[in-house]
Image (cartoon, rainbow, N blue to C red; front, side, top):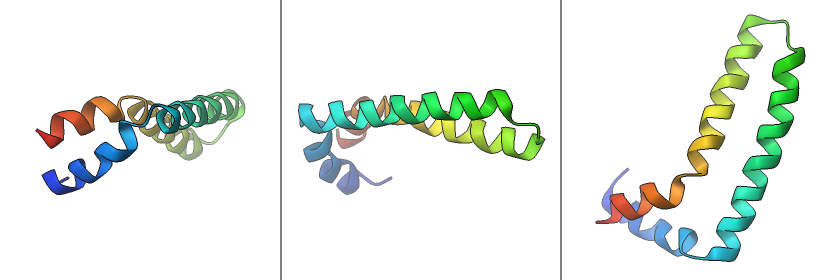
Length: 71
């Protein structure tokens, strides 16, 4: 991402209420996807779920990434 996009995202990540909501959403989705992972039999679906879990975990570190990128 470019520096301008990071700076635009600062408005989002510096709002505590918004970030708390984003984290709550990510946690809820992670929980749902873990349940799906436990019952999935298709290797392709398992790979898709693992990718989704990785992205949701990345969202939890979004604030740090944006602040670093905006420097």
